[in-house]
Image (cartoon, rainbow, N blue to C red):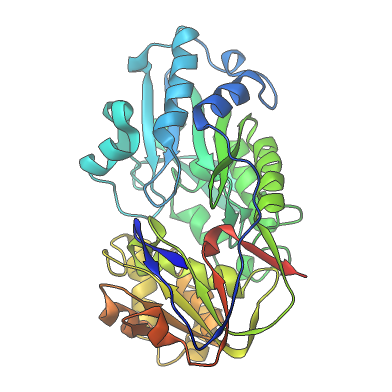
Length: 407
């Protein structure tokens, strides 16, 4: 069996273990460009042309390199539609929605956006405009977006630890927003609320806050996709709430895997771009352990093969994550301390600590084992070194795009 590691794969061999594999059945994949054009022709709500005037200054917010989205293809579809409507190319600014991640380099933007890279600027979280408030939390949006006449976005509707599914308003509200909304939505009070969980959008306070922030930002039109292990499953366009609902249903049907048994260890595949750093790669473990169905026995182990060429990561959120884990004496102490509050970005340390209270996390095959060991986790040279012989093992080849549910 092969597992993702960076942009390549590694062969997994556990001959002395009883191994099961959790692979979503999926559905037929679609051609992104064809599906995008079809979605633009049949949007949720009013068509793009009725939302954008030919003389508008247009901001299109796209996801950054931590998301697997063919933004160049989605942008091409949007830009051609805008051009046909009379919107000049020079009136369009593409804003890379970084949130608290590091700025993308020119080379990375070129690789991500191709012929549209010349339109792109990195979001600056210090250059913001307040557009309203949600539950007393200021909603602050980057100036190039807030000052535009029309706001569009791309994105991916995929399983998300807190929002249930990402996408929709999240690209703008978080990606082109400020620390204020991240602090509110990712704080311990929000993350402890009923309904804040992987795979759920109905009755999810986190998702609700994002959608309300999107309303205040006055997002005019979204073009999003959802994907599975084999490719893109669908594309939807139009109102931000409606596209999330449509694509979440597609994703849930395609990505759910029933699990009946309990296991000694779960091997959580992640691959690029999420295994670029430890901050992102730990999602594989928390998605498995904190999802609808935790497949581990008490004291079971989570193993993540991840390259980690960026170590812990270079953004403010990644640095805060590292600092909290590195300075903690143990997971229980860290969890109790963080229940009283933490800086935006450090929430990943909070959910990792929540998992570490019950389960060990081991990162294998990485180029940054010292960073892993600094963070209350274990590092091993290979997955086989991390799993005890004779273990019952569940392998989840694509842990970020698999929803483990009750059998």
